[in-house]
Image 1 (cartoon, rainbow, N blue to C red):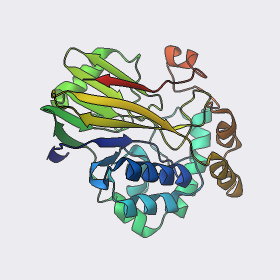
Image 2: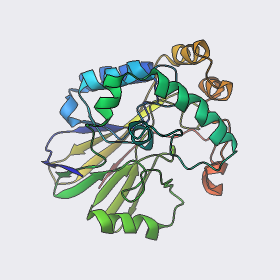
Image 3: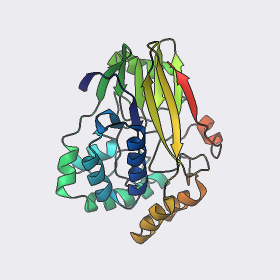
Image 4: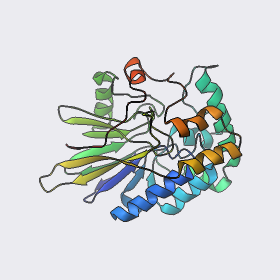
Length: 277
């Protein structure tokens, strides 16, 4: 856990660059327009995955200077493992397709990029408006844990107890949500590298804005980018047609990892929202 102490300015959080250079470049442009510097910009892991430009994306993130935590993909590459570490059932479609992009990314990444991964913390914490905020990938206890809105709250509560956090910001499951119980809030950050299974091609990010009344305004924001170039790069490097198709439909090829509730929500357009916590 890397502790950053108190942050008094707006913070931008995103996840899933997923070797998608075009989305990552667009989000950097947005952060500049918003006046948010790299020290207040956080990526919650999985810089490389499905898309076609892993080395360029990692180097872009490194040059941008954002604060990043390790995802399961970075951890597996550091350890020179032969799979992405998502825990997909052996022989499943997700297992088969992930092996294609993982092996491609591992071969494409330079020694410099892999060394960069070794400098990244697994978790980051900071304080905003007297609230302790902890960034995780899947969960604090398991970097590859799939946490959904439908995941029982007692499982989430265990993570709050372990971290002493008031707010946990994570991802890995691929489905965004904000959920509160009493004085605890779980935020699954929004994806930039792949569509969020809602039938659109938008990328997503979260803004945390400290307010004068000591609350935090959480803004869920979307943006458009050159997704056609992203798909063309995937075709150029012979990556999985199933994932390439996602960049025309905005839908995942399969929902194997999703619980029943989230599976039924496929194709339902996610709305931008703002809440106070």
